[in-house]
Image (cartoon, rainbow, N blue to C red; front, side, top):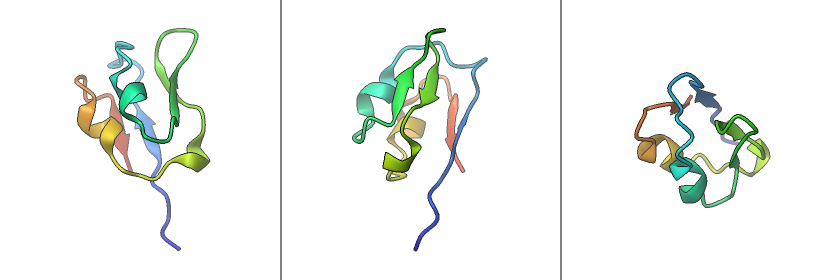
Length: 63
């Protein structure tokens, strides 16, 4: 079984635009109470990379 990738989020770089949240096909990401992205449902992630690719601030990395 392939190991899932983990989200590495740079909260200082995240401006809370929500693009990653909108593009996530599995609704893994949400904006928290500070307006920053966080991983809400990591088990649903399919490691498609759309969040990393679409983030204009390069604040998300899949590792």
